[in-house]
Each structure stands twice: as structure tokens, then as C-alpha cells.
Length: 74
Image 1 (cartoon, rainbow, N blue to C red):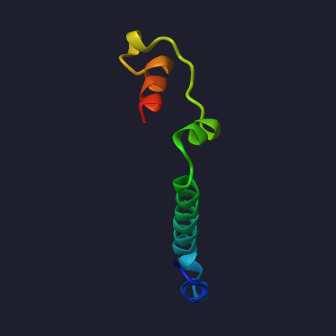
Image 2 (cartoon, rainbow, N blue to C red):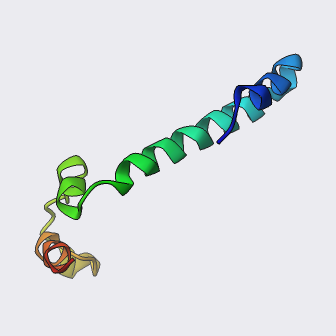
């Protein structure tokens, strides 16, 4: 985990704003991933529902029903 000591090292120079943003974004991503680890597939579907597009044959992609089959098999 990134501590405040590491972040304060980058406060000294104006050119290091990008590095601070990078560290913040990385820490935020790690936090979100830790939250998602505790969810079941059904709970993830509640947060990120599958789009119901029915033109999968045309675009050679998975449609709603085949995606739900995979989720139900988990």
C-alpha cells in the first residue's frame, strides 16, 4: 500500500503532479478491485448489468442470453 510518506516526496516539485495522479489512480484501482473481490457473479451483474443487444449474429459477439448462460454456469 502506498503511504503518505511516498506521496509527500512528490509534493516538492511542480513537475511531479503527473506522478501523484498516477499513484492516486493506482491506489483507487486497487481499492475498487478489493471491493469487487467480495462480490458474487450475481452481485457484479447488479452493479454492471449486461447490455441487452440482440444483434450478436450480425456482429459476431455474445448476446444477452449467451452471456447469462455463462454467468449461470459459474
